[in-house]
Image (cartoon, rainbow, N blue to C red; front, side):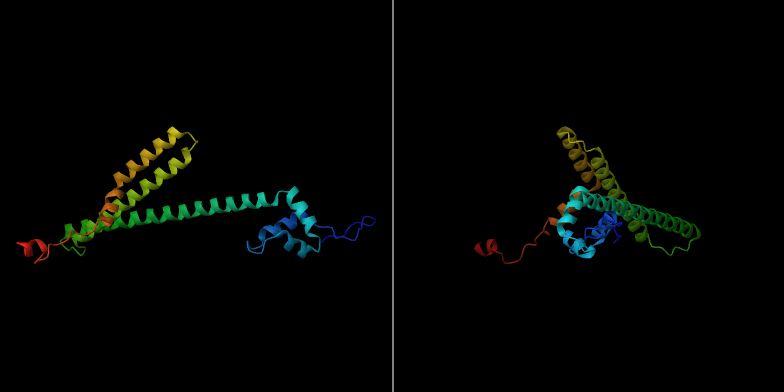
Length: 189
C-alpha cells in the first residue's frame, strides 16, 4: 500500500488499483471476491466494489480467461498437428522399410502390419477432414440461417464420407442371433 502525500491523509491507505486488480485476477476462482481484495488491502468492500465496477474488473477477467483459453487451444492444436505429422513420417518410414525388405527378400514386417498402417492413416485423414470441416464451419459462422443449414449438410456429408455413420451403425447394431435348436416353431410342429 502506498502512503498518501501529507495533507491528504484521511485515515485510509492509498492503493494502486491496477495492482489490486492483478491480485483479484490472480486469486483462485473459489476465493476470488471483492471482499478478499478489501481484506488484503485493508479497505472497505464498498471501495473495492466501486473500483471494480468503474474499471470493469469482471469483464477484464473474463477477457483474460477467454484469451488464455484461446491461446491454450492453439498450443494444443499445434502440438497435435506436430504429433500427427510425426506419425505420418513414421508410417512413411515403415512403408519404405517394408518395401526395402520385400526387395531384399527379408521381410520382417508382416503384410497385416501394412494393412493396419493403411487403416490408421485412413482414420487419421478422416479425423483431420472432420476437424477441418468443423473449423471451417466455425470460422464461416455469420448467423445466416441458410449458411448454417448449408454447413450442416456439408458436415453430414463429411461424416458420411469418413464412414462415421457406418461405424456408428455397426457399433449400435446387435450381433445377428443364431437360431437355437428346439425353438417354439419346431416344437409346435
